[in-house]
Image (cartoon, rainbow, N blue to C red):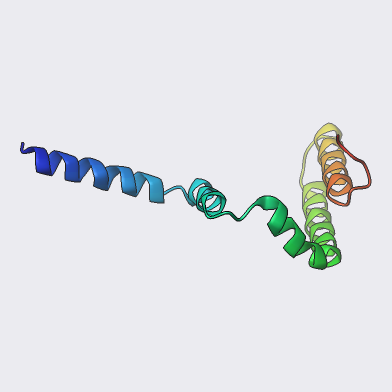
Amino acid sequence: MRLHSIVGSTVAGGLSGFLTRPCCVIPAVLSLSGVSSAGLGGFFIKGRPLFLVASAGMLGTSMLMNLRREGGWVNKSLAVGASLLAFALSANWIGVW
């Protein structure tokens, strides 16, 4: 093989591997462009009540779906507890350092 084709395939493979992970690429691009999570948090703080209502609705639906399923009480109580803890953390009712 020629060196040109090896380098080209290596670059193409690396680029395609990099682009298949948008969960990693998008934060990296935002960070490199100077957009920090603190700035985005300040942007989204205006819609916090709406986000809390949406998260309460989704967590409530998740709890209802889990409670309607067949299964033991341990699984159901853990799911309800985890949902309530998740909402309490997102609503900042309980704080973590």
